[in-house]
Image (tube, rainbow, N blue to C red; front, top):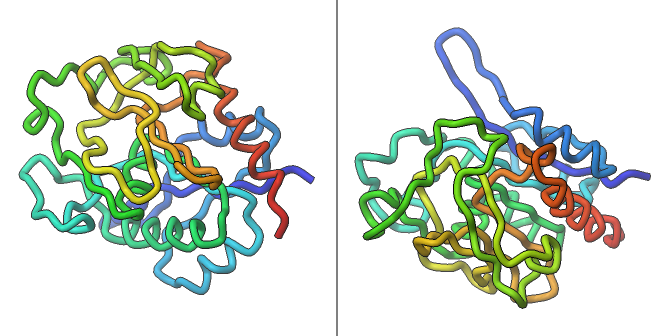
Length: 239
């Protein structure tokens, strides 16, 4: 049986509709890697979350808007505008519960940031104001194309997967990891020191990347390895 992978999504609430939205690139990448993807709607019913965790083999925390700084004990700066309380609450809860059940977690862009926050870490609310000498990280170009390089730590899980010390990635963010959460370490950095990868220091499978590998699998086959490796960890779980 193919591993069943849950994908978080963006919650949109407008005067005319309420919707959950997810770029299809995530679904394409998972199907090509050999998984059965399922979109997890944004809910505030924790019993439903427990139901998801009973059947899921792994969870991908996807990209999206800003994380509310109150989650890590800070008042918001004026640059933090694109927030969703419902999504923040749901993802915080599902990360903590999945962590306790040792369910593999893959965080992409915002997803990496949310894993860090849920495990007690914090973010730079706006790297352009808070990190001296920061370079570009918010490309308006196609997300399927590379934008800047990152350096991957040699003795890291991410290096084991990508088998490269330097790699060209896309970039579409203005927040980044600041203080690390519990049992996490940095696995990749941009040339300006912005955190581009985190992972668990224990035997749990927790991997976070600040870029979007799912959008670049046709440009660089190596990015598919992130998903296939993740699925291999999911397959090893027994419910």
